[in-house]
Image 1 (cartoon, one colour):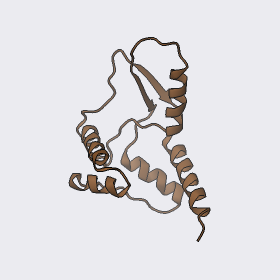
Image 2 (cartoon, one colour):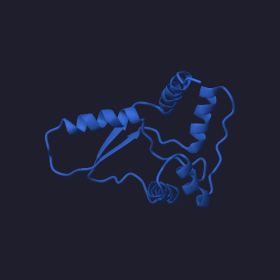
Image 3 (cartoon, one colour):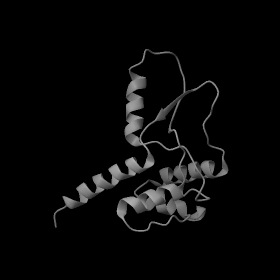
Image 4 (tube, one colour):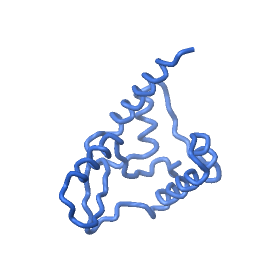
Amino acid sequence: MLDPLDLTVPMVATDDVGQIAADVLQREPNGKYVVEVAHLRAYSTNDVARSMTSIVGRPVTAVVIPRDQRVGVYRSWGLSDGSARAMSAMIDGFNSGWIGFEGGAVEREYTLTPLEISLQRLAEAELATTSKATF
């Protein structure tokens, strides 16, 4: 959905989000504050395609999903109409540069799980799920 395909954006592994959230929730309350979470390196759609190529052992080519098709794609993934529209709007924010790290007086947490490891874990979990299916 990112356009152009080499546009890099902050990404984070879901395991890392859970760990950081648990750490933050165990702190003493200190008023309202913002915690930005991302891997030290920003990634692009092309980076994801390269990682997936390595994981699945065959070429994976990234393509841009046109803006007018995004909501339909998100709906096909099971998102509600409202959620699909919100996701598309978020992608507009990334593509335009409007969404980014706030900077300034916020706490920034950088994570250690690289894209390749996160995608490998997702692929292994999917394989384990599909191989247990009964026919």
